[in-house]
Length: 193
Image (cartoon, rainbow, N blue to C red):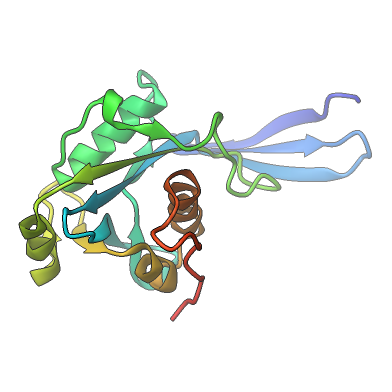
């Protein structure tokens, strides 16, 4: 198979746009933004409760909060796992080590490969915590002081899947369940509100 021809159309510090001519002669635009890392954290108790530590924030593409697992862009001098740990600390204040994280895929994934050249690395962990931790997050949302307008929540996976509008968050939550399973052996349904 012949290698597609390409030329850059526009460069910006945050992204660049490339035009590729495929062997068929068809032209495609590819937007490159770099790579991101994301981490899901399932908190569980001796009493059998489990909930994810989730962030919510406004996004420019649509009104209302987006509920997401902590995530962010990988800096040039970082590995994906280092970026996941940094973003977790920045967005939630939680400090973990590389040994705490489980990669959910053997390679990075492309969320929208027909157009978007961004690749994502997904990690997860399960942490046993006292019930008081879950109660504290459930009693009121916590705002972080990271400089971003982020609010922390805990919620069960089925709730995340019913309210998020972020495909990355849906995929990440389901990848976590594929790895760890669920208490009833079934994946939660997708039922957007």
